[in-house]
Length: 106
Length: 121
Image: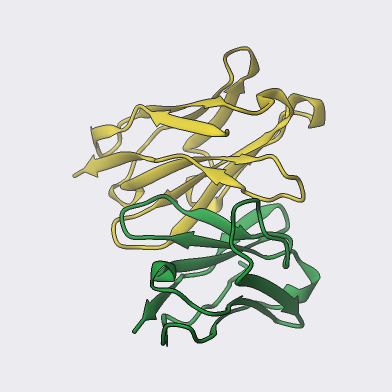
């Protein structure tokens, strides 16, 4: 079955750029979405179709996808961005989530 | 504003059944594909399945761990999504999120607040 691999944790200082990766076989041939889940809350879509931001998502969130790696970038990271982040893609009609990355803003 | 409100969660014994409902509003439900996503305690997100709109055939796809035990259905007249869960296992314990796929491109764009299902042994 298809797998998406994310780092368990990423740390960043306030104001710096956070980068979270998502790896999968030929992932660049698929669309990648990214979800933010803050403690005790439901997940929220922050990036879809690799690079698009839903309405209401700050411009500091951006995405890219090429080769075997999708990337979520948070520029000028704020304390409010501390959360778990999940990538998601589809493979043969089946939805697949990455294991999640805990972003800590130190 | 998209609203997805799940109900029907609770405590059930292993081998039992439960039906979850999701009341949807704020968008044209009959045109939307819908999904269920779950999250075991302290774990990550897991896609359970998806149902297409009636216009696209209305068929449902289920993830391997629940195939043959869970059934996703919809009632467009009630703008409600369902998840029938049979032969429940302890590993089915978790929060179940109803989710919409409105923007297209197979994007799961909104998730509800979730309902907790606990399967006891």
